[in-house]
Image 1: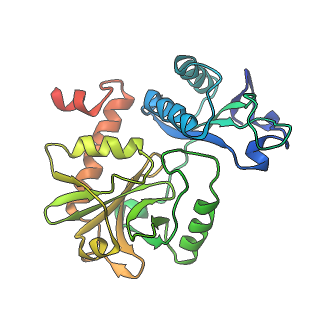
Image 2: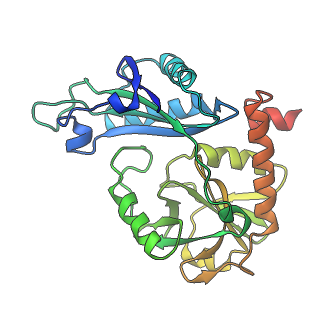
Length: 289
């Protein structure tokens, strides 16, 4: 059983409820952010809260408390749970509105802590498959609760025995996955999209870790770039770094996780282990030691 924070109260998850009249239910109008812990410490909590506030600014939802107060609420919610490692989801809903479309500033703030479960080991040892999908996210800079595109895209991925679906816009730009960012290793450098995407926290950490280890290029990607890629990987809070060995029907290189990807996975594990032990707060601090 989990303990959640719901609009000023801490309660058992089984007792947590939301009005059926909330705009998050009726219109899919709300914002959220998600992270995991390392050694019980929420990964880049301040940055996730900042991104939540930024999402709110994009969609017209002001958080009901300061970022400092929300930080304390998350830490207290974690304290009231006893999982070895946790997933943390912060949600702020649109609230109840007389016409169901005009926000009244009465949204519900929720912090949900659940047990962090392990993903399949073979994803990381053998590599996984992803697909591309001609879908564009509305307002990609905001992490909203409207996930219809993601739900449908992941259903399509599942039918193709893939673990993720990557969005491709009308101009043929390969952008991001439903919950991930994508990186290609090609021409002696790591390449990743930098426009029309959600600013991934894990993505930013990976980019910092790559400094001094690899050359990096931020630019638009295409399906043709994927065909030329020597290695492919995806990053996300819940998935960390996953080597990708197949995109649609294309096998990447020899169909095994590449050595550059394995190096990034090693760097990321070293950093998150140190982060969980409180030995560093940022990649730049780590690399400066």
